Image (tube, rainbow, N blue to C red; front, side):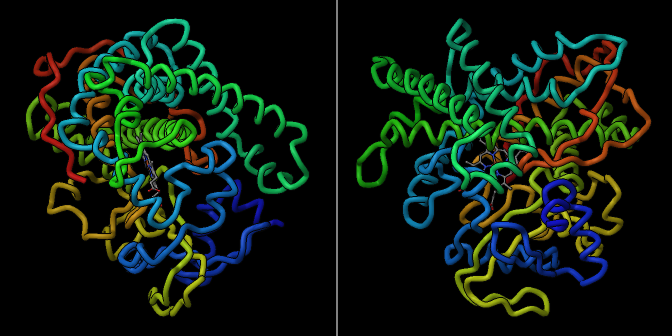
Length: 438
Ligand code: HEM
């Protein structure tokens, strides 16, 4: 029970203390989830992701995510069905298709930055949550400004608030079997209303004669076909929309919040960044800053798998059927992979980059994040647009503490900052990004 409480509220500290006592791999028992092996071994990501087609997901994922994402979510499907969904969903998140969202993200960022107070403290994390939600409403849902967008925004905000709560998570783990009582019933009502709103959007999109000329991801999903020529039905699409919202919103907002917290604690990096903005070298440096931030503060600090065959991790030989949780955080803190691992040094990513399977903030194998390229693209545009318009400084001397919000780990105080208007002479317009490197 004590272990479960620590796993829910402070897992990184729990893992670090276990690592100090038992080494890079150890076992843990959590309520309602079978015993699992936790590992931050330097070779663990290669061992697990290298054979990912044989693995399945660890059981905890479904328990926590299914009530809100739905049973057809790509995050929860397995085997051939999972791969077919990935193939169908990946194109809009890559290459030219993805770059079509550049102007949109830049404009939404500019609008967001314009609303920030000048000269007095405010919290960055909620501002980034609001921005990434707007990006999803436009790029993924394709909903225009107006009462429909407002209704959907409000419903989705409430869903996001409820899913972020650790209390709800504990409640889900311990009491779901008691039936749809108390907070769980109001949660279910909210999900039902949100599903109804999404059903209307999907229905209208199907009937839209201009469907082919639309660029939002919902339209692309409606028009897309599996390899056998069949299409996704409405409940399938709805589950993917909920998944993209939940997987893509909080994660990117939190990645941005941590990036600025780390820049605040490392003013020399902030200055290098500002000095290089506006040219191609600048884009590379911004990407390196975001990559280093996702290394030091991986937003999703662990991913699970049930091993499909016997696997060697460090000195351990794990039989097929073992549940393994790869601690991305412990892996990213390995001295052998990253000298002075606690130091925030983006240059690491300019000097040839990390070894394969040593930088895994987006997971890996057949379940690697579908939105990895999109998220890094979005982070780059947002960071560049912000620095072009305001000079941000920390509103607190203390580095942020880490707090769990469901599967993500966020800055506890919300990254308090102060913005002053500042125009960098060399960054008038957004230069064209050099392309994603994931
Ligand atoms: C900084 C931002 C993000 C981080 C750190 C992140 C991280 C992750 C991680 C760790 C996984 C699990 C991978 C695994 O099990 O190996 C994942 C899966 C996923 N992510 Fe992201 N993500 C981010 C942004 C996004 C965005 C913007 C989207 C889409 C809008 C997205 C959509 C997904 C989907 C659909 C999956 C499920 C993939 C599958 O199971 O096949 N993510 N993400």
